Image (cartoon, rainbow, N blue to C red):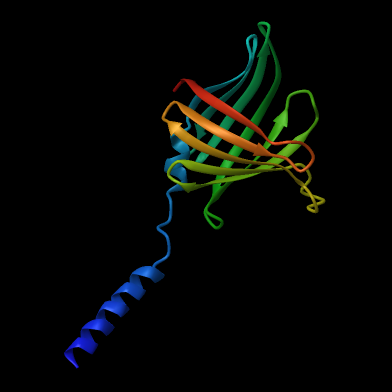
Length: 164
């Protein structure tokens, strides 16, 4: 009887550990590690820049632009806010001259892995995901990102921190 009790006790303890949900990630703190100016080298004379700055307690403003042959172009702004209910960041981006607005949702799935979805048309949700990105933070100053698209081949990017 004593052996049966010990086995049952072990089984119950194991089952309760196995049923505990995964610990919730602190999305706000994890996003803060990305604050700063980031650069993506496109070719020997062109690059994409992303400058992520805090906005309030949980939001971020991101300025983006390209530089080619010393000329800056393709400027845009993104505004992200933390949504407590979904435990994700949501945001929108607008280009300075293109007249195009896109919407984003992103969240960390681990301490070093971030998923982001770009939606081209919220008013027609069928097929509106225009890009899925999965980023892996390799070091505090570098992350690697794989982008998949519904209408063209995937690509990869490595962004390096220019400064905090």
